[in-house]
Length: 376
Length: 175
Image (cartoon, rainbow over all chains, first blue to last red; front, side, top):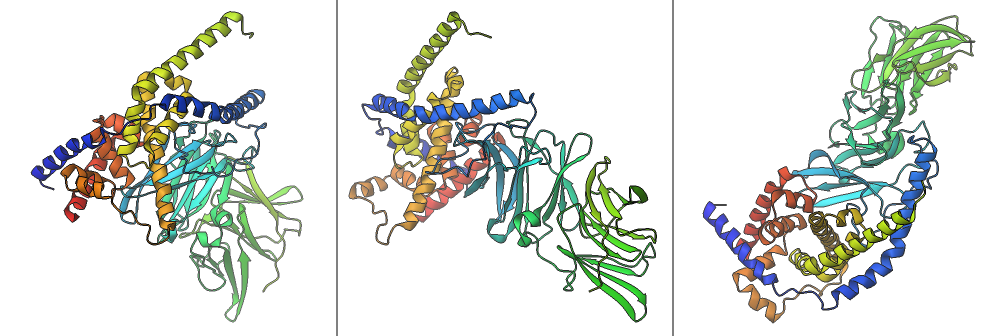
């Protein structure tokens, strides 16, 4: 727009303000206001009571994050067109989590903790661009008070299929969150103060056509894993572009490399793994392993041979038998996926041998018996 | 700690002061908030302003600072109007055919004037664009005040205004 045209437009705009001079208020506006205040007093009292109950619960447990006296998380705020970002409902200042491009438009993604019903905080977010705005609210996890749970709020956005976005709030113990993508890359989430009870918020929104968030790992100040969440398990298989290695669609592979199992070929999908062991030129054993969302995602055990698929937060594995540690192994990352592998050959193992997975801090994450699997 | 009579009297005095402050703010700014809601395109500007004041009444800490109170009222009016416009949009989509907005003869007369053209074009802007222009040119707010009222960062205020002017200019060209 030319400068002259802009000047004229601005001048005309200012002049048009007078069109609203005739807008006036009712003569009895004050009386109407007093009647409204009387009608809404009951609702507000309930809100204050809800807040007071939460504060008492905090005091009783010595200021810890556990609000044992809290009721169940509230449902999404019922509407009537009410705005969860309205100042009255906010428990903390809205924070800008990220800037993304959606439908070609620069878009700001904001979030805030909001309590519209007096039943507890919801994590509400909104995507705001120059021409549109969309958002929603997520209730607090019903298990949020469990010490094993760090992700107190968690939701996913699919945005019409074009994007994948994860939005979460972690409790005050979480010092960092690592977001593992489906291609094996990892990024540290930017945590923003949520303004309530030490909660911190983060989001990651990406185009659905690229690598998608697959696993979230929250760690404490010492680097210990507080909680890991497998997003396809949480949001459904379609969260990732599903790929079955057993059906011939791998996302990553570990080719024979002369290490522990030089004749093993391992293909990884998003939810399974295909393991091929070649004993001789015409003798190959194939097995299909379904992967679970746990730290020990799956284990293939045949005789003295074992292939173990592990979640990315696992830093060390012990093979134990009857309380004795037979081996201590470090997982190998598989390029192109978040999974890691451990391979082992050991004739000493009994049927009672166990896989024990640890984080970097030495905290036990998971354990599983090394049961023999029949060849398919 | 027990609360003595003196504390109770002080609390009562605080409450009385807050009511007095609230009354002053209401009489001093209610009309302005009705006007702001109208400028933003609210279907019932007075209802929006009433609701904003009811919400202010529940915030005694905000009430202690008259400047903060006005800012709070403005933000609330902006948010409420935006929410209601979204609701209206949904309602309009669900309305049967033949119920489109028909301009009255009186409205047509106003449209012939430049101011009328502008206000009509403003009605077709997105909520964010309209907010940016109303707060900037009709309320003469600073960038900081606009950022607070719109719930955006100060750094993006200028770009909102710029894009809104472009959009408005485009709409005026079409008419």
